[in-house]
Length: 184
Image (cartoon, rainbow, N blue to C red; front, side, top):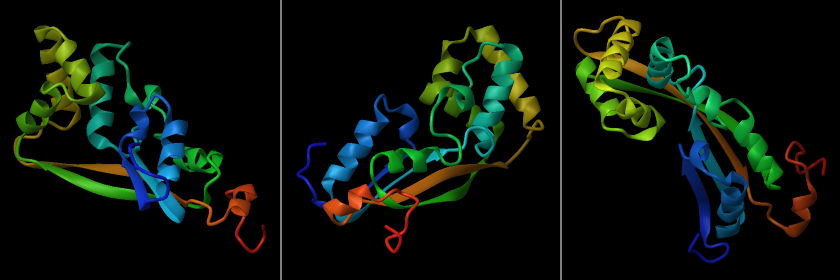
């Protein structure tokens, strides 16, 4: 990161840990730029259970293509505890986890489908790489799995979040993430 050591109170990575080639280095850099006692935080989508839009998309993709690259199987950090473990392995302290719940409202099914057709993210890239016939099959299967919405509808999502602190002193680095300051 193009910043000096210890210049920020907080560093956050929202919805990106899934895609980093070296998440350990990313956490080390986030820690480096945060002052002692500062916060390092991140969140990722819960692809397996909590991201209704993508879970349904990949279920539809798997129905027409058993080899579809389901994000729940291929991306890291989408399960409870994985981000906390990453932060703990970096020597951070006072680790906590939470879930964040959001909803997205779509005016029509075509609004949702248009997002996939834009090619953004793994689902979008998969969608636009399909032949027109396979795209049509995917669209129809997704439409059916969502209950054939004819008007406005809402999809829910859950993100898994974790936060930790950079140790305040060099001696705090020896404290295990699960230990509180009074037991170290």
